[in-house]
Length: 405
Image (cartoon, rainbow, N blue to C red; front, side, top):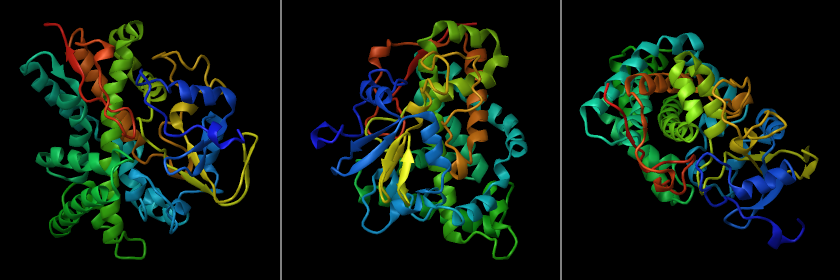
């Protein structure tokens, strides 16, 4: 693709099927695991679609997150809010911060949250049962599960959940938003978090923030700025991804009725089904530029030589559909239980909240499929609308109905 006019412009238009990579992405997947693309400002980047190549970008220190934010570099939407945060750091700075905040996210700690998550799910379903049908699964359930869970985790009053969603939507939604708009939303959320941290210092509770502010007075203590950035990132990033995973996963199951019936008949399949749904439906939204890396030196990736200082874009959705890593990757199989997928990334930046997201998805589908008999979409697939420019496929609404017991 030496002719500049033949280099595809990225991001691609949204797919008509929310959990499919789309024709433009599939064309590149069929050519090479690494392809040259043009970004909105006409600069060059390298789009990585292969599973093994994407994983290499995530774990190899030659691909830097920190250099993305070097002076003079163009950043897009989400990226603009991540400079100096843990997500925008390389080791050893990233390693130090992650070690300090990792404790509450161990499997043991997350398992202890299961009863509370189950209670939140059941309370939301109680409200759905008491309300009209069809119900909007997005507003009445999908958005509220992670908002409520993360607020509990941080010690944020549940009454502030809707406020946080609005701010998170501006910060972590569209790359096309102006930097000023993103900055204002980030400042508002950071200001609230700073006030909350101050209250936790004066009157600690049984929550993540209280645990972090009570850490020993030493060089290994989080600074106030680091703590604010961590809390904002956790609430905003974890909220949107988990919420949209619930909604889009149900859409995918609805279009595969045999798999939906299989899961409904055997709730013990939930852990395996969640892993398969994570692999199958995590699709970047229209207008989204993935979390980029910059090459520190010349590299050879997937047989392609990439010079130093180049933008590299790993795409988890395409990688999760790579036939080199998965048998029949376009088939949804709730019993597949893939041991490895890239929906949570890999390496130093593997998602800190992965176990929390898994727990929420497991409990969400436990509640939906056991307490709402015959739960189904109330509109055809063609009637669904997705918000443009979001990090992952983001439904405006999802009307659903169910049978009386």
